Structures are given as C-alpha cells and as structure tokens.
Image (cartoon, rainbow, N blue to C red; front, side, top):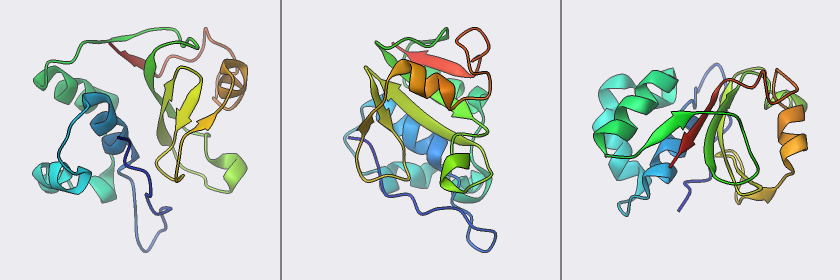
Amino acid sequence: MFPFGQKPSTKEEPSKDCGYRCMYYCLDLREPYETWLEQFKFFQPTKSGITFTDICTVLNYYGKDFKYTALRDRGRFVIYSGIWLKPEGHNHGHYIVYENGWVYCSLKNEPYKLSLNDVIGRLEAKNIDGAFRVLEVL
C-alpha cells in the first residue's frame, strides 16, 4: 500500500521523504511505513530526502530488480521531477510513482489517473527521450 499523507514541505518544517515513500511502495512491504522508515533515521529522511543512487542501493538490498529506462504507460516507475509540484505552488523536486496509468504522489490522499502524455508534460524534458530520471522497478 502506498503511504499517502505526506505534509507539504516548508522552510520551518521540511517534509522531504517522498522518495522513501515511493521506494517503500515499490518494495511491497507489509510493516507500517513509519516503522520501516525508522531504520533510516540517521539520514534524517524528512529533512534531507534521498537520491536515485540510494534508492537503487536499497532496492538492490531487498532483491528488487530495476533499470533506468524510457517511461511507458505500463509498468511501475519511480520518477523524479524538479518541477512536478510547480503547478501546485511548490518550487522543489519531488518523487512520484507512475504505475499503469496511475500517479502515486505522497502529497495526495489517493492515486489519480493521468495519461502518459500528461505525465511527460509535467516533467522538465517534455518528451520521453529527455525524461532520464525514470527508474522502472521490475
């Protein structure tokens, strides 16, 4: 289950664990998100976020296969975008999961349907060839 309900990040109270939330979902874990996240407390996940390299390291640790690839409308993808939240008034990067036509965004309360073209339109590159921050979890 995807751990929705992340509070929007502010200068006073950062909330940058969207990448951890996406990774947790892709791992298909049963323990509660907050319990699982506790093992990363040394890294201060809500204050510092996570990089794609670290996401790959954790996926590898759990034995999940993954690859950097072109975004498609079928499959499970972790995507990073520096402008994803701009239409919603936020100016910072954000991780989402795009799975079979559905967007899983930690700042929402449930997934929402979005076409591949609309997803690409909200990324920096505006085309599949330039959308290089895409990781497919197999």
